[in-house]
Image 1 (cartoon, rainbow, N blue to C red):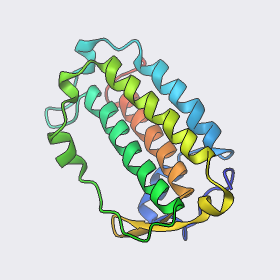
Image 2 (cartoon, one colour):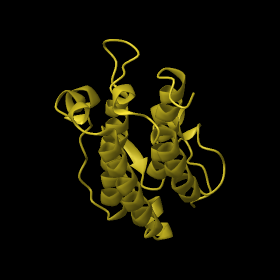
Image 3 (cartoon, rainbow, N blue to C red):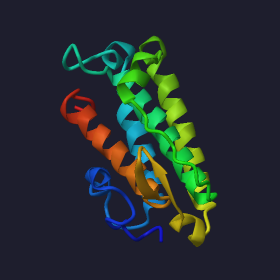
Image 4 (cartoon, rainbow, N blue to C red):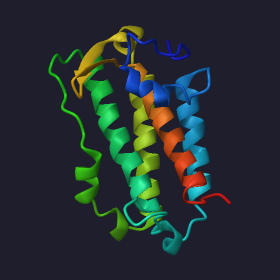
Length: 174
């Protein structure tokens, strides 16, 4: 199951913008590899650069990395709840509200990045522990149905999306 890309019945259409960015293969191997790549991309960024916004109304580099951490936590919780058969619908996440209440710009980028890496390690442990049955269990979040295993692909694609933004719009890695 970890090598089979989710179908339209396993995640809503919106999330295929992320799922489609993930190469074929074992999604857990992709998650493990990409956090190494993201850490390598961000490690040389100094604190001045980490506060950069490519437009006044856009997030800073620190905020983008913090958003990755927040979002991965939320998606991992959704996968956990679905895998355990929790029938309760999980509310959505208002990323702008969350960002407005965050302290990412007050923190060191290295601390935010360390948090993201720790979250990824936890995410990998979570998904590796799923049985095939748990991988296939379904639930509802943000008023749309998901399959627990599809969330691994969404997390991977979400990181790839924001890494591209960091490279293309913020000039990180140049």
